[in-house]
Length: 180
Length: 180
DNA sequence: TCTTTACAAAACCTATAAACATGTAAAGGT
DNA sequence: ACCTTTACATGTTTATAGGTTTTGTAAAGA
Image (cartoon, rainbow over all chains, first blue to last red; front, side, top):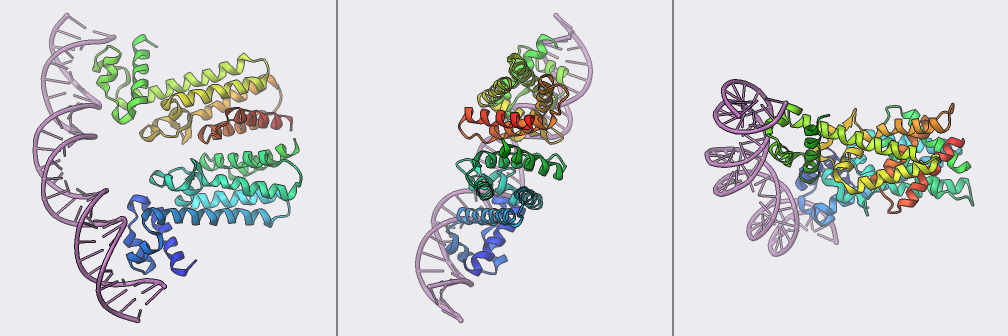
């Protein structure tokens, strides 16, 4: 990916987060990245293409962020805790990220951040599944993975206010469904 | 609750479901119930009061619906399955119910159907908690209750398309967290 | 207790024109 | 090749001003 492309994606992500899809101006994206409006069109075709690209880019960014944290800790449950904390903190920090991950508060963004109606974070199920498979080879891990992601998503959308408690709850369910 | 009050709530619920908060006309609510517009104001003060009352009414209706199904089956897990099916079917049937229960697709309704930001269905946690307490006296049931409701809500908001599978998943997690 | 009538204030259409943004194209510069 | 500038048709917002509808309140009457 070229430097300019990346710059454009970052500018667009910023503006998208503060102004939303409707308030996003192609010329503003261009000038922030120091290029002409035409260049944006050359790169992404049109506004939809640009926003779509931002969504894909952000999604990749967070899925790899989660995958990285899952790999970092040798203990599978501590790794999950860490990945969940990462997701939670990113979601709190950035309204756009929140929209991309969960599909909530997306308003006009929604067409871009769901695939077959499911928010993109559900791709995280595959990441978690892979993680569990690595630690428990030969076991059925799909159910635990999906349950964990659904539960984590629930805590993202409707926080109890107690982050540690939420992480404990998710990990506890993960352990207990693996033991069963 | 007087007959007229109930009639007004039903009329308002109907109209709210089809026209939304914005399209709801006080005079239409009145004429459907066969009373004057003024009577509606006497009863509920203003439009907000009316809609608030509808939300509370619908909530009670569904919480008692859930409680009833939980009591009907002697097997605690079959009872949960039945209560979940009830909730799922009602949510599919009625857009307004869906909004009241989950807080999704609520648009201008949202201020009325959440309490401290949480959709009213979270009151169901208390109902489920009571249910589990009855079947497992002396045990800690709060965690299972909350987990179950969060998971069920997740399946309501993001259905996998497989209702039976969803019910199985919820009940399975409930059992396994009680066994632990 | 409910209805009718009346009314001010607010919210809502509707039509109009001006300003702005999008998307496409062509010519020119590095 | 890649980006910029300029230009233009098309579609969308925005602002304005009017007329209408709806809300919310009040008072008198069945």
